[in-house]
Image 1 (cartoon, one colour):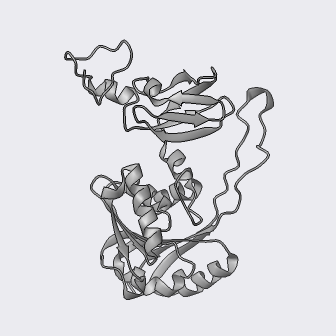
Image 2 (image 1 turned 90 degrees about the vertical axis):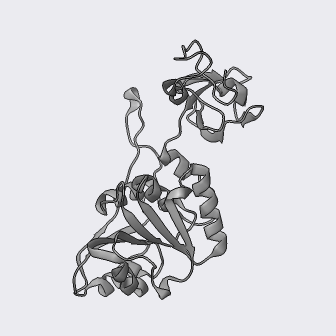
Image 3 (image 1 turned 30 degrees about the horizontal axis):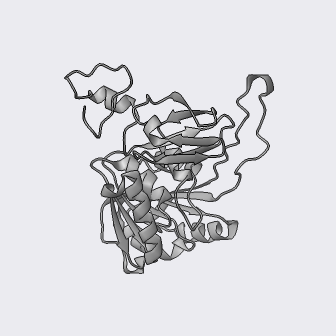
Length: 280
């Protein structure tokens, strides 16, 4: 049996000693990121490593007991408490990123992809890498043939973002660039530019020079004063189809007997501003 690939219990490899690709995908393997969800819906993400343990509020789970188990299994802690063993989604991973600044939340990030038509093969410039949350979403969307060019002036933030993207296995789809974008972007003819900065109005010329004619500009700002200032700067022949939107995502209790809104929600996190680059 391969030492680094563990088949599911009672599985039947196609060849003696070699687990099939279906088995590798269906079962937790060493090095995989795993999502453990307890009976109270509290959860954690861990990378499975032989010999390690997961400490939870409801007992300890040995990684060796998780490796080889089918995804979707129920596993027990040493206290007999049940946990679901699942593959984490990108949504889960973004919420657990190491960060020192506010991030672009998944509720905005997914909408940004649709609004700016970002998908496989696209080339996207991002200004303001931060902790890399939006960078990860963009990289996940444009892979395998696309590219994200992410600019950040703070070396410590770029280092953190790079580590986060490496942990998610997405760093190969990103070019990290540390410099002030007042000098302009290296790229031209990109499909979209996203300015995650407190003063995006100062960099509209640089963005217009980088994006293809008819391409997309996006920004996320927390206050109305910033929005009106950006709109005033965008009211020029070089930009059109200006839009301002806010994404609210109220959660509900998913229980048939008491279906109702949750008591708490993440409400206002920012205003999304979009525009299209025009020949002007």
